[in-house]
Image (cartoon, rainbow, N blue to C red; front, side):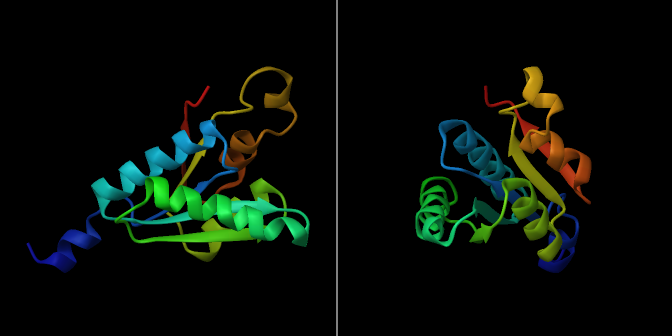
Length: 135
């Protein structure tokens, strides 16, 4: 089988994962990186900020995740102005992701019904979503 044929058969080619730098988000990034290694996929690490003064520190969060979990992978960091859900979905759309990975933080209690990030992403993504148990 040629390299091109092997590449076309991969389960996932482009994986998007969101992080805020928290230990629970690190688990989601680690899972996305593991999947990317097994599928030879590209990883897009997304961080969100709401004020321009936060952009630099938000970008550092993404770069830290990249150096901690995605070493040796084809990967890119996206620091996006906006809320986390929109940032993840916008990047997923822009890069034609076939998988979005998010942590399960916020999937319990009242917050689950009020719009947690994993809940909102899972209901709005145009591709497969993996919710990693992180709590």
